[in-house]
Length: 224
Length: 224
DNA sequence: ACCTCAATTTAGGCTGGCCTAAATTTTACC
DNA sequence: GGTAAAATTTAGGCCAGCCTAAATTGAGGT
Ligand SMILES: [Mn+2]
Ligand SMILES: [Mn+2]
Ligand SMILES: [Mn+2]
Ligand SMILES: [Mn+2]
Image (cartoon, rainbow over all chains, first blue to last red; front, top):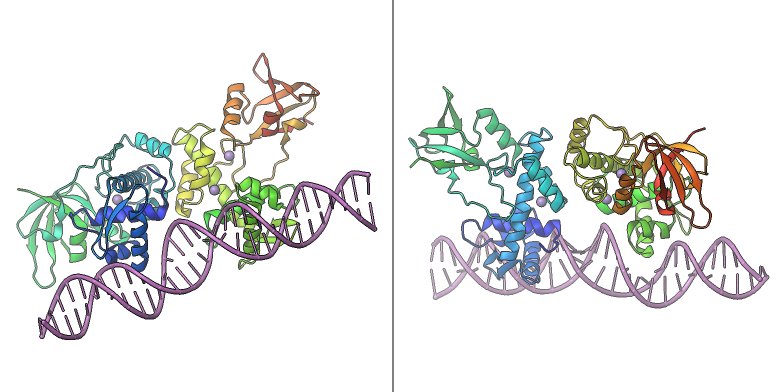
């Protein structure tokens, strides 16, 4: 891992996330993800592409993908981020809605030693508080087949794998509704027009209703 | 606390330390302490003095002192630094020679919430692993009367209060010799020429010999 | 008093990371 | 297939923090 700035690490993480679907990371989407002007992204992508070794492959007007070197840094940063989130919850008593922002800064500040100590203290964990897999020390990462709950039709059964962690309000709502990673559910009903989903949650009598925003933030594995 | 950069926080901490003796912080000493060129210090001091509110009082060619606003930031950063050092030792099993550098980075990255959680977990501690007092949440700090062991003459008895934490090799040597904060000692002998000190350490039979480098790194309270 | 020199400041420059405004290119639709 | 809108890049700038080299200054020794 050549030493890279917090900014570069965040760019690489964002490119990693936006290219999970096999497509290229577009300038505008990166700009939105990073809270930065599109022109700034163009400049940074050029820099990353001409780094030695190159961290991204940049094709003008088409977007960017990670090189192996760039992916290593992205995954190393992701590992720190997720370890830190779990650490904050388990050791410092944070709520799962409070950890993302803190981890977003700390991920750039901890040493390899601290990363290792945290991992050991937590028992080399495989998942963060939101159900996201933590890259292993060798930076391998099992890729999941989870899809947004929004894609599940009525009648389908499944299990919550992970939830999006960026919006604290979403997370607070999810825990209020008992929609946590690992929980099984059945989609009782979908409504047209407003696109609601009625869920029966395992071990609970009443159904819960969720809007599209929540349905997009919940990632599930569906039963065959 | 207006939001200040890591660099500014480190400058203010350095000025705080260099002005503990009531004198002004000189450009060159700041440059040495911060690992930066003297010209850079001059530039930064001007900036800090013209900040709104001013963080330092800067007199051309004379040096700088902290304003109350600057001192608050220095003490807040010092509190984080020392809390983090103790946290790393107690919770993550760091050695006391390994914590300073890590804390030097983390002190700029943790939130007020994290600071509070760490303090609570540690039981609102008053001292860091090197015996340095931790500023209270209201940033008050008892000022100590400790002096370098180097100043103690033969025959004097005293107690180790704190040790300088910047050099890991010094710290490893100190723990090897059993010279830890809280330990009582008697100065058995001082030598002229090479300026050694022979100490008898409480609860130990043999005397230990230390050179000037160590004697300057050990801060003690001497018996009346 | 003067001179020397160490300390400090000034001058000019560089890089990283951001910005806005103005091109330019692609895409999408009629 | 032409054109309007959206996406992207280019151009030009700004600020924080650092640097080196050159100029300045003040303090101490004689
Ligand atoms: Mn981040
Ligand atoms: Mn997460
Ligand atoms: Mn620091
Ligand atoms: Mn310390």
